[in-house]
Length: 259
Length: 375
Image 1: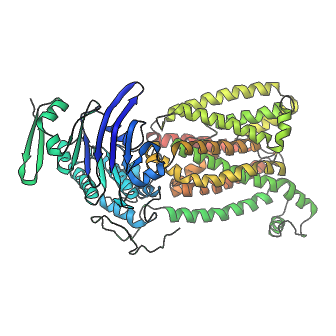
Image 2: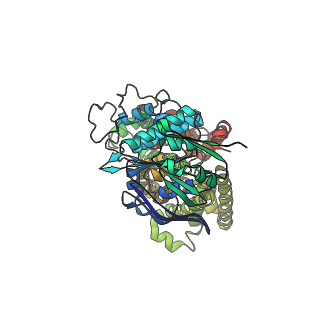
């Protein structure tokens, strides 16, 4: 359970986020969308405790800025936009870093690492050096590392949170769907997912809840089909859109109208 | 090492239905077993190197006598008085000093590289050793004059302590200058290191200018780096600093591993980054300070040893730091043995040997890893 109220973030005197309020209940997949510079990544950074904020951000009733990093690590995992490694770790060793926090039920368990590798489809890559992989493969390794950190979606009867910052931007379409499915599965099993996304179609297909940002404010929030409508999207993205509801599998199709 | 542990069916709790567990067949990409093996081999290698270093040198001490001395814990009657004096008063403190300093140089190099996320960070290169040197020189020159009361009060520890504060100040400054938003720029770090080195060099120069003849001779030898002045007093002075720091460093391994992913991710993994950085900086400054105070500027051990070991056993600090301590000790002992033998009965300052091997190695890393280092 994530609860954000009166969240304000300033960089110097410039206000980046303006009174953000939303709640994500356990077992929910929540996507944060909006144009570049609308404050998506800043919001995520405030929620993960990376950026100082005013207001309140609570994960399972713990205030993020006042909780020890180790206790936070117990409750949530964070996948950054990109990760660079300073030293020549193998893929296996990178994924094992997820167990650093030592908070899993089985902190040393080899099974979790192997399963995470398999989950992201990199079990043949365990021995390779991280630096030799492509950007997309590196991103999947990092996801596996985060999964290892918060392997059980529900821990001590509390829903854990997976924060994903643009997890699929550097991936091809097949792997985009693979990652979205893993995240969806995490929330289906009781975990909570908060993802910053650019792809509106995948957002519509996989999320339970969407937060649409514009200029550091929440423009709209709610279920995908309510938030991602033509009027909202055209106002926020300043671009003509066509939104069709494919009734068969309840999937929105969002395409820009090319002038 | 829990490698042979069974993983069968002990998985409690609400589980991720979709996440099937695979029984691990191989552990591809895991180098921990290899690291463990190499560490054991190096323990024996270090022991052998110590015996070799004890029995070689300008004075003729038979190999058997050294062994007899060690295995009787110094009580053997089979060795003559001359050999006993050479081993006990000259070579033993020197070997122990070499082990401590070699271990401390290599470990502080590895720790600093982990903190700065960069394989070129080394106390000797980025000005920390010069800062520690300035602290030490201050007391060598002024310890009998203005600072005499302080020196008297701190006893045998006054030079290590002065070196510690010199090293601490430079490490702290360096980190402040070269790190922005948790990212360290290699270029800024190296440039800041040059500036700090020059600044501390200027003050050291001023003190050298003030020094008298005897102090000058001490300073010159000391600045080149040497274990020649090894005495039991020096061993007693630095052991209580270096040993606890080496032990402390094993507790830093987790945090250093997390830091390789960047400060933000380290925090996400549960490391209290601010406190961790402070402890790390103090540890590096203390061990560099102690090493510099006892032996002067011995360069490049902190670069070469961690780099070689990362190639062999990988960068996991849990294995890297103990391995660095062992290999650092072995390398420094070997270099010192060469320094004592090569122009016997005179001897070369060991800093010349480590620099002659280490500086080309440094250039080689620069050439090979330029892409990786983002230069």
